[in-house]
Length: 273
Image (tube, one colour):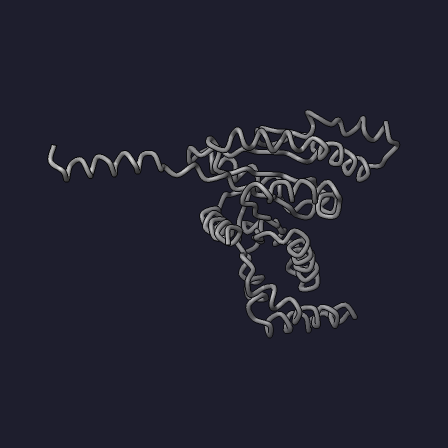
């Protein structure tokens, strides 16, 4: 064979050998206040990815949920019986959730093995967290789970926020402070999902974040002492807003998901840097 052709053949063989290993799956940790629409958002994400023939690996970490509206690959309720934990340890609802999560966290290495086995089949791992946000963000088990995922896979925190309940500037501010505290605690790439845009458009919130004066005008309508505190806080959060990824989504209608995946890929780049 002519020399040139042999060279091309060798190069093709070499490139075949050096095929890139499959990219590790992206872990999407979905957090948010009770009633913000986390579970509905996870259901919508899951359905969207199934529709694109890219089924996600879904993990449910809420031991107290009654009915899951999406199929979960790993469900904490199969391992820990929440009502039994409450009875056995004489706990209330929140204590029961914390203890269930603690018990589950002791076996999280097994969950990691399952994710590793499935990494060729699923591009995304979606984790739905308990309804009571503080149970996950401020407990030892929440930290263990978050750090275990982030040490092995590109991980992104998604903070779901109820836009319709944040039209009051003071409520909006407390939501943003909570988001900021989670960002500092997890130190992971962070996306704020303003959910329920089918009820109210999220443009008012974007404007408040981009234009300090507009937020001050909205605050001037408030006369409580908290508004003074909020005023000084908004100066502090200005820096936080400048690098924040924000997406308006309606989990009910499924709008805004393309924008969400765009921001997700940017967040993954940020994680890899």
